[in-house]
Amino acid sequence: MKANDSKRKVLVTGGTGYIGSHACLSLHEAGFEPVLIDNLCNSSRRVLPRLQELSGQSFTFYEGDIRDRELLRSIFAAHQPWAVMHFAGLKAVGESVAEPERYHANNVEGTESLLQAMAEAGVQRLVFSSSATVYGDPDLVPIAESAPRRTTNPYGQNKLDIEHMLERLAAADERWRIACLRYFNPAGAHASGRLGEDPNGIPNNLMPYISQVAVGRRPQLDVFGDDYDTPDGTGVRDYIHVMDLVEGHVAALEHLQQANGFIPVNLGTGAGLSVLELRAAFAAASGQDIPYRIQPRRPGDIAASWADPSRAKALLGWQAKRNVRELCADAWRWQHNNPQGYDSE
Ligand code: NAD
Ligand code: UDP
Image (cartoon, rainbow, N blue to C red; front, side, top):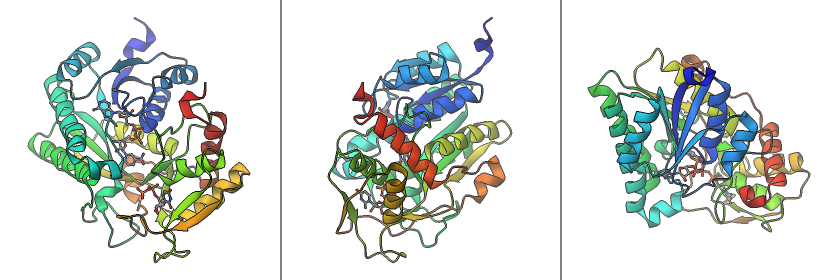
């Protein structure tokens, strides 16, 4: 038997995506063997050789959709994974408003299909990518897991529907062990500069937009609103380094050895940064000028959101280690070395 055969396998849905690809490395480093499935609707096959280069291993990859039940059945039969990390999903809020049915079919029905395949295969450990979007416009910051859940857009509704589905499942059958991780604002890249965020088209999120201005792909940053009730008037968020985030997933997976039920946990740093503060930090880390102009507020945006991360520390023994300087330096290394993302070479 090869040494690898004894490793615990983890099925990673959305494994070639931004967070999933970093998670594969973190799983590998922790002694798990990731098996990837992705339909490549928002990622590139070119991630795979980079994962191999960084890990020294070639991970098994299935190109396919999580709604393809036959495919899922065959993957579970072939690999008998110990657990599933479920990242696959569509995530653009604006697009979800324009195409709510597509979002529901992909995100909610896709998750139903995955859960059914897991139940059939007797795999009942799951780490799910939820989002701080389930807190809507919070009454209080920092936000604890006990805060009321509400949403203002179809993407957020998908996450909420899935959370409810997972709660029902765990309540009905105590063998389910489900870590429901509510991410704040994932950003940054692997320190090697070989893996990072590579959005299609115009980035919706602040960090990739700033990076593309810094590298000269876009002329300036539009700052959406400077009249919020925040110290400098611009929106405040909790930017968490993607490597901290995925290490939180591995900690959650390990926690599932001893815990069952539905376990919601915030993954954030506990500190908020404004749009202008993040821009300044990125300019300092990259040495690039980042011109900007103030534009009207973006519809649906909230003033401020940052995590109370104390539950993650108490339960998982995890907390974010990397600061904003490191986050910007790593994001810049990735953007600078790969100005066109994975299409750069
Ligand atoms: P991503 O788009 O880079 O990765 C998602 C991956 O899932 C993509 O590679 C895509 O091709 C794949 N995919 C989508 N639908 C699929 C399907 N039906 N079958 C198979 N593969 C499918 O996004 P990401 O930033 O890595 O996000 C991963 C997860 O984390 C998503 O569920 C997202 O909603 C959640 N999340 C992300 C953020 C963020 O800011 N990036 C914040 C909170 C939550
Ligand atoms: N933002 C901005 N310009 C952009 C993108 C985002 O000013 O091009 C602001 C946005 O209004 C919010 C913050 O940056 O205050 C984070 O936005 P993002 O979309 O990255 O995350 P989310 O709003 O989903 O937390």
